[in-house]
Image (cartoon, rainbow, N blue to C red; front, side):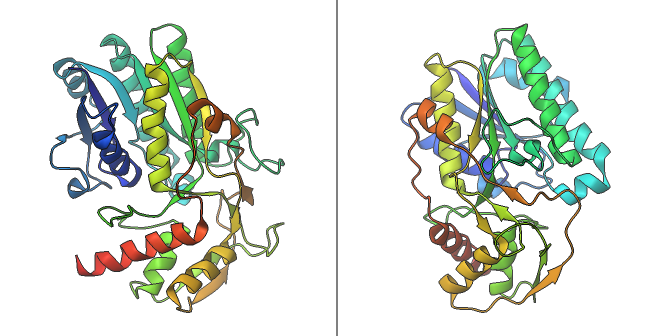
Length: 331
């Protein structure tokens, strides 16, 4: 039996993907193994029938033993640090945890003849693009260490694939939000930095207020514009990426978003509408490393994966995130 190793599979996006894999007719017959430090992930987010190993992808001996023992054929690599302001304050952590650990994992994968590698990347590699929508051919010009750490990891993957049998798919995420439709899983971040998560915490009175970081951007209302994708659609894309490689698809890079964006104020107004609650939001200065507008061109992934999003609706995304936050108060 072939196995799929999911690093960081106890995290927000990773755990949703693990569940989708376990329920997929094409991949459920594979043995799924999750490797996670649980520094930011949660053991309870992983289905009970999934093999779980607590550890770090930087531990070569551990990774080698997992790949060999479980006959791993595919790796989905989520494990990373991902808070932009923290990356500016502590760049060494990001290059070590994101870039160097990815290199370690790749070296182990090649030695153990792993065939497929799916990488969790980010739209932060594009930086402040002057294009209205960002395609995969848009130059990578990151403006913060988080984006640089992911760009370096992408280059490691591309270069190593040229000298090995490893095939890859790099998925560049835009802003991810929402929760499982049955409320079985959602974003549990201990120190949330995502707009929708923070706004939901204000609605649920976990916070008194929130701050809008930057009101003087060149956008329709002065606040940053982002392309939001529902976490279940993003999880679907990882399952489709594995199928794409299984069917002989060529190594490539794909954007993951919906192709349209919303400003910070528009998202706050949407959450006020679905919750019928006024959100106390203070205007603040821009955060270091934050671009003004980030919107994806997703025609490439729709064509290659024959992908049709199921949750492309900002009201639905916001409502599912809010229902999850309310559910977490009683669970």
